[in-house]
Amino acid sequence: MEIQHQHHLTNGEFFLKDEQQQKLAVMTYVMVNDSTMLIEHTIVDESLGGQGIGRKLVDAGVQFARSKGYKIIPQCPYANSVFHKTPEYADVWAK
Image (cartoon, rainbow, N blue to C red; front, side, top):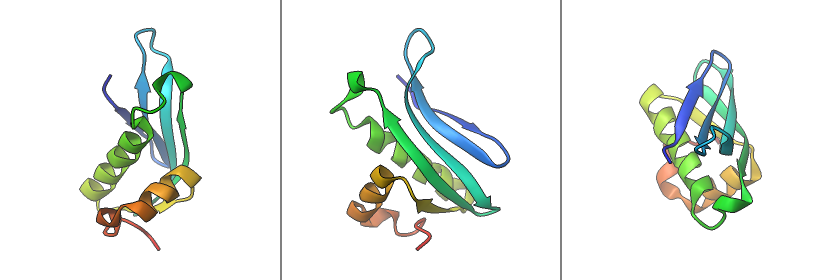
């Protein structure tokens, strides 16, 4: 399964789908301004538990932010926890 991304003007999401095209994991964000994205939610289906999928979604969001020159507000408790444990994210963290 490959992480997919949909970005709209004011929001977006990173997600994984199963063979039936059902989303099994998703991380949603909103754009609070032209250069800052706020991670709202990270949800991973129980069937994917323990595989690091949530972390991969956050990583994908960080890579996207870096490519666009964005900063990230990790409001979601999971994303916030990952940011606190990952000093390599300091360049995109909007503190």
